[in-house]
Structure formats: C-alpha cells, structure tokens
Length: 544
Image (cartoon, rainbow, N blue to C red; front, side):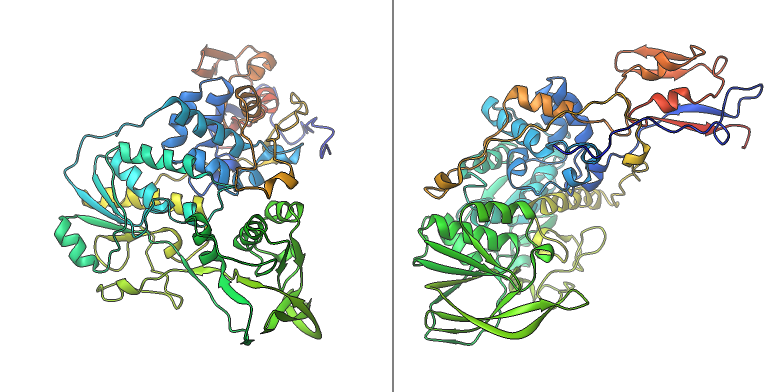
C-alpha cells in the first residue's frame, strides 16, 4: 500500500495567526461543513451521517438516514460508480473509504431483516402519475409516497426496474435483490401497473384523475452508426443483446464476437458475450484507454475475464465475417484521426455499443414540450417541462446518464412536484462550504487498510451469471465505516478540550458537542489546530 503523506504535522506561523495576548482578536466557533463525499453524490446522500451511525453499530439508524435520500441502497451498493469515493479525502492519505460496500451491507441487511419505511406525512389527497418504473421513476414514486401523495406507475415492460433489470447484467445486479427493493416501494402504497405502455399522456392523466405527472421512460434505444455491410455477420446493438439476455432469451452470437464502443455498456456486452459461450471477444474502440468513457475498473474486470481490447481502432467495413478496421492516432487536440493503416478481423457477430437515446415520439403531440435533436426532453431548473404539471427526469432528459443520477433526479422532481401541488416552488438550502483535504489536521490518524470485497475467481465467473462480488461482513462494514474522517463535522474526540491551555472549552454531554467560555478563551487557536476534521473556525472579533 502506497502512503501519499508521511508527515501530518501542521505548520503554525504565529507571526501571522492570532495568539495569546492582552487583547483577544479571534474566537473559536464550532461549524459543520460539507464533506466531499456528499458533495459528489448524485443522489444527495448524507454519507457522513450514515457512516457515523454504521461505525457505532447502529445499522438500522444508518439505513434510515440513507433511505431518506435513496430508496435502493442494495442496488446502489452494487451498480453505482461511487464518485463519492473518488472525492473522499482519505484517498489523499491511503485509500478512500469503501462507501459503496458499506451501503450495500446496509441494503442487504435491511432486506434480510424486513425493515420497512413509513410515510412522513399523512395522505394529501393528491394523485401523481409516473411513467416508467426505472431508477428515476421508482425514486420519484418513493419520495412522493413518503410525502403523502398517491402514486401510480405505468410501466411498458413486464418487470419493474428499467435498465437496472434489462441493461445491467445479473453478475453485477442480482435480480432478486432488485426485486426486494422494488417490493419495499410497493409496500408503501405505490401501485405499479406492468405491460402498460402510455401512448396518449393527456388521456392517461384525465382518465386517472392525476394532478401531476413525472416522465421517466429512460433511454432504451441504441444509437447507430453507418457502417458499410455486405452479407455481414450478425449485427445487433448492445441494448438489445443485454435486454434479450436478461429476459431469458439470449441471442446466438457464435464463437467470435466483436463489440464496437468504449463505454460501460460495451464492457457489459463483451463480458456477457463471454458468458454466452464466445471463445473470443474483442472490443474495438477508436480512442485510447485514457479517453474511454468506461470506468477503469470495468475495463480491468473485462480484461481479467479474457476480453481483448483494441484501442485506437475503428470499423470501416463489414463483409461476411470479415471486418475491416483502421488504426487511429491521437492528434494534438486529443481527438482520434485516421492513419490509413488497415487490418482484418473475423467475427460471427458484431455488437454495437455506441450509446443510447430516448424514444419520446409518443410525447410529440403534447403542447408545450420541447425536445433536443436526439429526442431528449427539455426541463427547467425545477425539473418541469414546458407543459404545466408535467415533470421529467432520468436518462430521458439532457445530461449525464447513470442509475444514481437518475435516482437523484427522481428525488429532486418529487420535491418539486410536492411544492408545485401546494402552489409553491421547492428551494433547497444552500450547503455550507466544502471541506477539502488541505483543511484537515490529521496527526492523530494512522494508516488503516481498506476492507476489500471478495471477488469470484475470473475463470469461474464465465460459468454463469452469478454475482461476482461478495458483500462485507458486519465486522468489516463497521471497520470500514470507522475509516471515515468525519470531514467538517465534530464527532466529539475531545482533542480541543484536552488541548486548551485555559480550560475554556466545556463539553455539554454525549452527542451535544462543546461550547467556548468567552471569559477564559484567549483566542490562541490551539483548539483549531488540534481539531482533526476542521469542525472549528477562528472568527475575527472587533471587526478585524
């Protein structure tokens, strides 16, 4: 394990900072700042708070705090790309906290214990239609139900979950775990009607007596590219392939499979092809690894399973089972450009993984709706479309696409719908300043290696679609939560009280924090420098 920092001793310059003297110039004040993990979380989870409860062994309370923002922790602990961990301050010291693994532990524990969630408000008498039972639709329905509204979801497919069910392979997202978290949402009173494709939104709203609507149909249509093909090998898109496989009707791909694309869907398609019996699977991508849209661990796992990746390569022609590919090079602007060098690959099937877009054609007749060139539905800052009372989110609106982003947008939309039904607009509070690593004082911390989830051996993975990553044990989850620095919030370590030379800091009791006695405090800032998580600011006095 590499250690990035070896000396945490802060440099204190008494020539510029406040110090003990005849006239006090500054006073310590306890503050709560925004941690980088929560700031990076698209679902808006209070990660620091639920990790604090988890490290104390209060798992039920940790889960309750988590599900105030996100209804599906067991799902997210498996499929989220955890930008919270990329932002984690601990990553500057040894390795970031494995937030997703603790989240999965809490989600799995909740389902095994049968924990339920109750509404926070009485019934409002208002009805909301949600179109689409994917991550954004389920999230919106959940939060609206918690706020007391009656919610009905109309889903065109045979199963709730959207791309979580049909787009993410079962080796990453076991279907039974997804179904359990969907069932918990239904248990709150959310009604899900399957195999019901909405074709006339206005008629659907009128017949059901709905007061508002949230559109969340996702982006389930594959983007295509024109490639000359003559009597070609089977060409299909990755969305179709993953959908058919999840439905129990996997396509016949043959022995040699080429996947065209460099995103996470391309990695999923290639790894799925290996599990369907392909002996040779090659990903062709026109840029280099540094510029691929797929997350690095996705590519690493694909390579572990025997998938080959041809970087800086593009398909120019398909003739029978022969693919002509051209080598690319990166120009000074970082973009790929052709070299005129060609080679031939052989494939029984070509899978196109070039991104997805939404099929919003059924909405074209709704007055006030506006669309981008690729069919995405435009919304304003309050998640409302140009049609009054019609909101939208998830993959069908412009922006980045992921399960966690979709869930976060569903929550935001629910709060906006709730406010709109009451005749207002939801305005979230401005968060406190962000606490960066440079503001921490960490001499009291030692190295603590990350709890790693056990992974199935690569050779065994290809034998089935069984989940390849194991969860943490209770002991491991609690230990991992204890690695959190609690950035920006006091956790009552008593360092400030112990360090104060004037005995000016008074502990108010367990869980109540501290207060400063102004009659004793000299403003020396010793408490500030001894606070490891920067929960103290020095405030200037007398206008200085």
